[in-house]
Each structure stands twice: as structure tokens, then as C-alpha cells.
Image 1 (cartoon, rainbow, N blue to C red):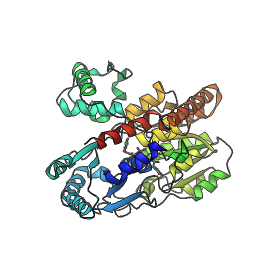
Image 2: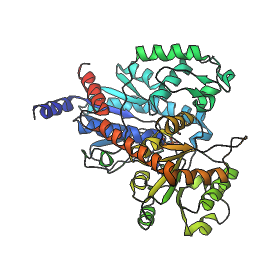
Image 3: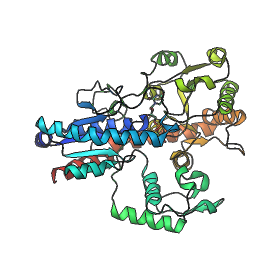
Image 4: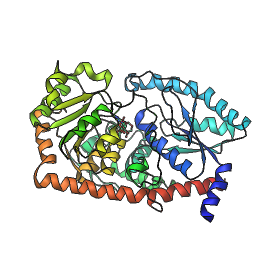
Length: 433
Ligand code: UDX
């Protein structure tokens, strides 16, 4: 009880502003982190840069400082121009918001900002405020990014066919490296130095999995919103459709909020799903629907359901879930592991190849769909991998492993678990500033 009282006292003094990057995979984990901070008594305000980002959760106040992205817009096609517009809007909007909070008697103590926007720290310095970087991807990727930032001109492209040896990481082949590294000039030896140096300089606090607690420790009751959605709300009809399917019988397919498959790969995927003769639920975003083979959705309707967006956590938590064919975005990966769903890894770019490496070889909770010599997925391989994950002793083993990770996830977010402890440490550090 004493402890609880103490938390409340801190809350009246500590106001944290959390500023996610305008992409679904970055918003969701930051919103979950906000909720955890709010549940520990802090005042949290979430900075939004798109009007559709609305919270139904009263513990989080959302403040809009811009409206930058229309639904269906693809940041991926024009990252630089988007970042320019974002920076201009934020350089005015953020100081104004911080000033407003001061005027309201709730001065901001610290701004937690997404690592995609390092320039936010310059704005904060001018205002005399602290900043904390929130990196939405894995620790392994944080190290690689550090390597890129500090030794951007080093080459590891020459390592084709060899492994890269890094402390605390599995042996990595070139295909397992994040895509932003393999284009670079880098030596593994230097990479090693950077990794050691970073680990000694910046003790990274790992938190997560950033999944609503109702799916994990059940400590917080609310699950009003997972992230603040940039997309039209997920189609609940797909849950009713799943309700009609047997336990463990459905293949769920999604490539997240950004990845684009080519038309040829969409066709291979469509045919692979059909050939597998399994039930499938496939998320094809509205901007991608035109790439589906003609009449596919109607013709496949006996076995499959195609939707533009879905409530992914509810889908993964559904008893009908058999496996998840995923691009291995970090959120999707953690969600599948946390809900005990084995994966078919089809990584596309950035951190995804490295995440796939961990899913397949380290956590042994999935298989990697091999690509052909042109780097494309093929229908036969998809069909084979679905069988491998859904059938036989291998399938059982992958499922058992996935369920084991679910338990580990739960331990991490439970009171006193690693994630919970690191969040407490973060809050204590704020109190000392
Ligand atoms: C991006 C990067 O691509 C990813 O590699 C990085 O790790 C985070 O940022 P994205 O590609 O969108 O994210 O993938 P992911 O990280 O999996 O995030 C997608 C989020 O959208 C997940 O939380 C998922 O639950 C949600 N989602 C996806 C839905 O709610 N409904 C859907 O239909 C599809």
C-alpha cells in the first residue's frame, strides 16, 4: 500500500510526453509503453501527427500537432519528403504543445521520441528539456543501427557466403543482416568494436513485448485501443469467420502496414495458399488490392477470406489460429511469439531478415520461406512451408516452442519481470532529474 501511495505522489509531478513516428509499427509499441507508464501513476500525453490517431483510453491524452498522412498514403514511396514535412511541422508544433502544457500547470518532464526522428533532441535542447529515445525494433537492430551511424562507410558486402561474428548474437549470414547494413561498406571487426562500445556507453533498457496486458499478464483491464490506428478499424467480421473454423486450422497472412509485394509475388502467394488447401485469412491493404489475381477473393471464398485490415491481436489470439505467414516486422513477430503462434517467415527489408533469423534458428518458432534466385517467393515453397508448420512432428515442435515463448513473454511483463523492472527503473531515473 505504501508503494502505491508513493507512485501516486510521483504521478502528480511527472508528466511524460510520448512522440511516436507516424507509422503503425511505431505507434503501437509507444502507445503500449504509454499505458504502462500511466498504469504506474504518471501523467502521459501522446503526440499525434495524424488526425485518425484517437484514443478511447482515458489514461492517455492525445494532442495533435499535425495531420500529415492520408489513409492509404505510402510513406515507403517517399520517405525523404515525408520526413521533411514532418520535421517542419514538428519544429513548430512540439514547442507550442510543450509551452501550452506549462501554461496549464502540467510542465513536461521528458519527451520520449521515436529513434526515427533524432532531430527532436535538438528541439528539446533548445527548450532545456530531457529526451529519451524509443527504439521500436529489437536490441540486435539497435546495435546494427549504431554501427551504421558511427561507421557508415565500412563494408561487409564482401562477406558473401561467410558469417558475421558479433557478441551476444547468433552467427549471421549476409541474408540475415538488416537490409540497411548489407548495402554498406563495413568490416565485421569494426562492427564488433562498435557493438562493444555501444553496449558499454548506453545500457539499453529492453521493455516489452509491448502487447496489451489483457493478452499477457491481465494486470490492466483496459484494451480500448492497441495502437492508435492509421487504418480503418479492423474488420470484426473476420473474427466471426474464425469462430466457424476448427481449432488450429487457419493460416493467417499479413505483411504489416508498409511492405509491398509485387503483382507476380501476390499471384504466387495466392496460388500457394490455394494449393495448400487450408483455410486462410489474408490481409491485403486497400492500396494493394488491385495486385490480387482477378476474382481471387470471390473464387477463394470457400477456403479463404481477404480483408483490408484486421484486429491482428484478436486474430492471433483466436483458437482457430494455426500459423502466421508474416514479413517479420518486429511487432508482428513479438505478437505471434507472445500469443504462441508459429510463423512462416517471409522477410522483406530493414530489420525483418534479422528478425526472421531469430524466429527460425534461435527461437525455433517458425520456418523461413526460401526465395528463388531472383529473390521471389514461389507457390510450391509456400505450400510446402504451410504443411511443415501445420502438420506432423515438426509442426508440433514449432507450436510447442511458440507456446514456450508465450510464457516467457508473460514473465517479462509481469510485476517484477524484466520489462516491468526496466519501466520502474526508467521512472525512478526521471524522479532524480
Ligand atoms: C514497421 C517495419 O516494417 C518493421 O519491420 C519494424 O520492426 C516496425 O515498423 P510494419 O511493417 O508495419 O512496421 O510491421 P509490424 O512491426 O509488424 O507492425 C504492424 C502492426 O500493425 C502490428 O502491431 C499489427 O498487429 C498491426 N496490424 C497489422 C493490424 O492491427 N492489423 C492488420 O491487419 C495488420
